[in-house]
Image (cartoon, rainbow, N blue to C red; front, side, top):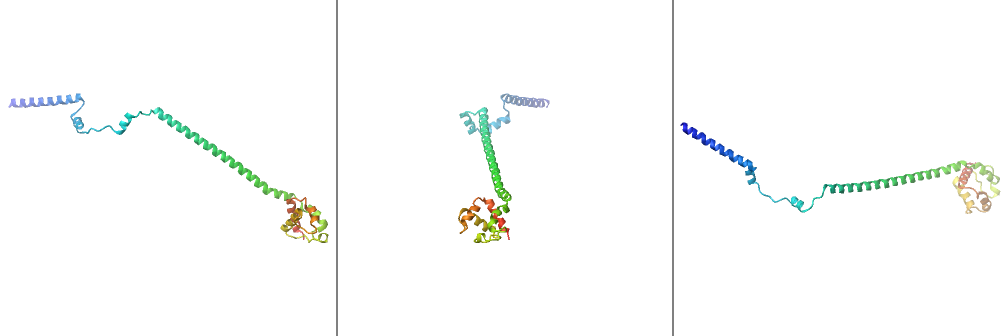
Amino acid sequence: MRKVAISLAVAALVMMTGCNEKKSEEASKGTTPTQKSVEQSAPVTAPSAAASKTAEEPAVSTEAKMEAVTKVEEKAQKAAETVIQKSEAITQSVKEETTKAKEALSAATEAPKTATASVDAAQLFVKCAGCHGSKGEKHALGQSNIIAGQAKADLIKKIEGYKDGTYGGAMKGVMKGQVGSLTPEQIDALAGYISTLK
């Protein structure tokens, strides 16, 4: 019985030694039984299209890619600067035109006020008073209508008509000499003054 036990022990030892030797052989070859079974079961595939394309075409260097990116960035920067410059020029032009328009409008609205304010209508009427009376109450030379209290707009039309020769009957020649040198501002002031007389 003792011999059987020793035989079994020796057989187990030999078996274990044999297994260890097989494992060490496979380890020295770089494969383990698990790897070997995976390798055997994995299908062999053809190289991918990207890998074959890379092999066919020369690779673009990183330096070339960076250079291309830099050129694109430079072009974009120049385009942006050009747009900014044009925008600033347009903005400046619009500001200048707006300022000119404001000045012209201001001058146009202020000029009549200043001119009318500076015209002494009463002094202008002194020349008229010789024929029309000090309050415009007379028929000039016994032929014209009384001018006191007539509407300002009507008086402006009549005075301008006398000035350019398009208005008036028998007194046309006389009146043209009297009003010929009046400015539009003076006519406006004088007509306004006469319209207030009673």
